[in-house]
View 1 (cartoon, rainbow, N blue to C red):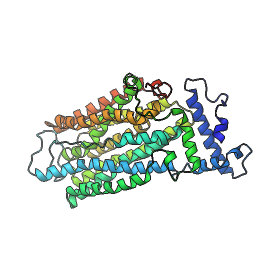
View 2: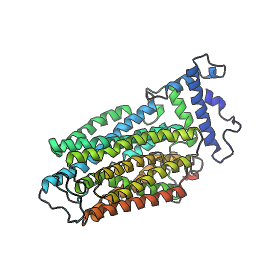
View 3: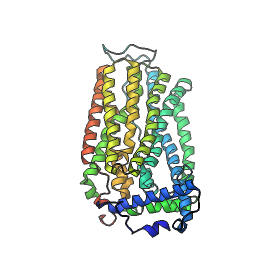
View 4: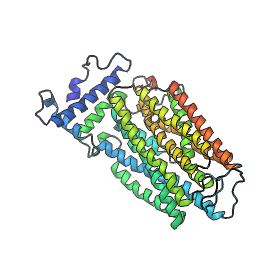
Length: 453
């Protein structure tokens, strides 16, 4: 095969003398294999003697790059799976407004001298918060991507899958609002829960652990994926270098970034409908539609940022660490600035919606930043590390809604201003910590030949 003939023969001047020489050489080889396949298809001419060594492989690689390939099919399946996960998660944010309005119709709003004028007949709700977690699917999908995603396609594949989170949010907010208004809030759980049960059947039929076990993957695509991931080592089994992980600053950088950024994200996810109801006084249908608007931008931003990150890596414009930090800066700094702006627009409904939309849209850039950095520094342990770092995000997601309830319990506008300030400050701290200590290279403790037993 082509990659077997070329393996072990260094290409002068292409990979440098950096410590990660093997990894970079593997990426260079993978890129040339893709380019050869594209050129052969574009020119539509007889293959050269060298290409004749593996004509079938080159042809299958060129055909296996589209949405019909097994790895992109997996990304689409995960996209819809995460769509349902977040639909089940965020429907409570709309239902809680209808539930509290229905059970406490005569409840008086919090006393405040600077509350915005009521622009509808909606009654403000209480400060009750609840947070639902579906944490197991995220470590599971990272374990899958460690065996399915070639290094030069990680950003686009993983972001395409994770865009389902925000697309589910975008669809669920308006649909849940309409269901609450016309059918009643209990039907939200019946409808979305039923769809989730049906989808489980398709999941077990369509998803396979690795390319070797997939019955419909082409031989060319299987060989391409396996060869591109050959240098990262096999699965860790039951062996985990826990002490080395606890001492790893790059891993701590990811965990801190998760905590700080997820505080902002989940604060918006769970509390934006409450803000629009209590402060801006949108009714339940307007609330759902306007709460969904930012997540449409987030969905598009997630997909575009993944494509752009892979483009920068494939052209060798930046190192992996530089790309992850660049997108983290964009995804954490700009939302923090937007939230500070929201705190000063007061009752300007249009400006508030614009800044909230901008904040949730730009935060999607983190999908090509620290969000997928675990698979860069330790691909063998990607699923486990995602579970660990995502736990930090989960904890912040539990604390944030409670903090919102506490800060807004006395004065609405002042309380929400403090909510936005705290979220912005945490985001900036997480960004500085990640930029200072983040990395893009495989750590010594994550290499197969040096893993602790």
